Amino acid sequence: MNRANASVRERTAVDPINACILLLNLEGGRFGKHRDLAHNQTEVLTPHGMKLITKAFKDVNPLEFEIYIDPQGDRLSCRVNRIISPNIYTCWFHAVEEEGSLFGDCTCGVPRVDGIPCRHMVAVCKSKKIVGLNENNIMPLTYHTSLWRKQYPTGVSVTCVSNIETLRRASNPSNKFRLCPAISAPRKAGRPKVMKRIKSSQELAMEKHVETKKAAKIGLHDGSKFAEKADGGGKKKVEVMAKEVDAKKTKQVESPRRSRRNKK
Image 1: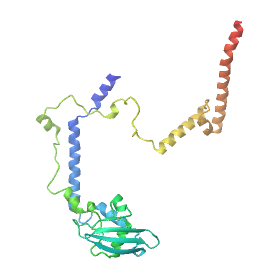
Image 2 (image 1 turned 180 degrees about the vertical axis):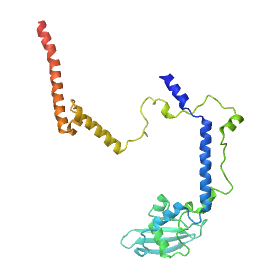
Image 3 (image 1 turned 120 degrees about the horizontal axis):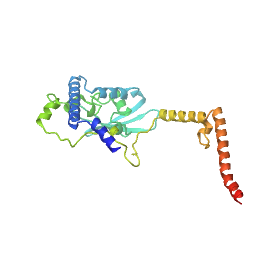
Image 4 (image 1 turned 30 degrees about the vertical axis):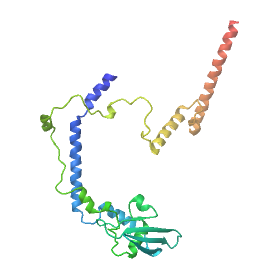
């Protein structure tokens, strides 16, 4: 068996140098793609940021909120509560833009958890009670195109040797190492890992259906859970098989007694 596994490893092994070259080429293509997208973006926010701000501003009516502005040094504190709700929340914004963003926080916890403006901050923005607060600078710096462009600067590219023959001439590879995929090796002994793939509900339902169908055709003689779920014909077969098994058990029990009587 070990010899067979060794032959499988030899056939399916991948050169690690070639695999690294492929990964680097893919990473270089991804970097170039994102660099072009970042510098061709004309909006203040990234495409994902535009989707988030559109979703956040949807179905928020500032007329449903009571808003009180309270400037506090470098912050603009706002007390916001919905007319139909007794809850009062306090949200704040930066008084001065930090790289084009006035994003702050709110006591409701949504900005800290989701990283986007909550409905209370959106209500303040829509009410126009803070001069200069708009859809762009209410978003955090993470979703600004300026930061996206800094991550992918112009004139920078990722290049790699694309020809394996050139790399072979310039270096001496070692034949001691191979990249062996998991499918070519046997399973490890012992208990499987906790993060093993969990079967979906459809797979479980299909397995259950197949086992129930087998129980209906063959019939079960051990009184297991499939006996109750089988069809009418399957139930009859199960009962017949159970009776036969009981009869065999009684014969096996009675046969030693008869042999003893015959000896006497």
